[in-house]
Image (cartoon, rainbow, N blue to C red; front, side):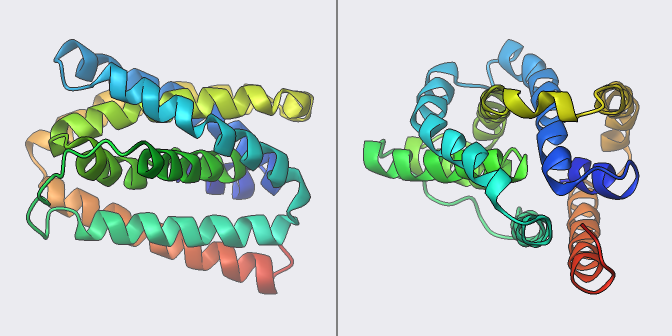
Length: 228
């Protein structure tokens, strides 16, 4: 969610370049975060693979649609996704954990997985804010396990979308995404200590507020300030 605005406004990427480069950042970040979850048994690899396979078609469609969408519309659509993620994060924990149905309806899983894949392919986001509740309701996973499993799915979806966009790789100055990836990994290690002294709920709501502010700025910049 933060990688795309960073590439747009700090590094002057086009909307298509930013959403493509962010896939590499998301893939590495999610993969890095998934490793300790897998070691602790907090990720279900079978469900992750099923979700990923069912979403490949949506991911492919998203990568084909992205170049056809004008830059301002791509930015505006991404801003809408950011607001959706902010709402989901703000509400997280404010309600009791839903009763999981444990139903593994293939059609429902296919629809949700394809929708997440579509978002990943178009906007370069992982869609974890959609995947976690889907895993709880469709597969009946506990929240903690669903969060770990979603990291595996996000990493796989992002790698798949990045592979589908191989024809645009030559347009990306990859040294900049590499710096973001390295900085993000270092920052995640340092910031992880904040979990010991700062309320997780406070962090989530602060991040949700940041997403809304960024979304409003992106729409304003694209619509009124001549952004690309």
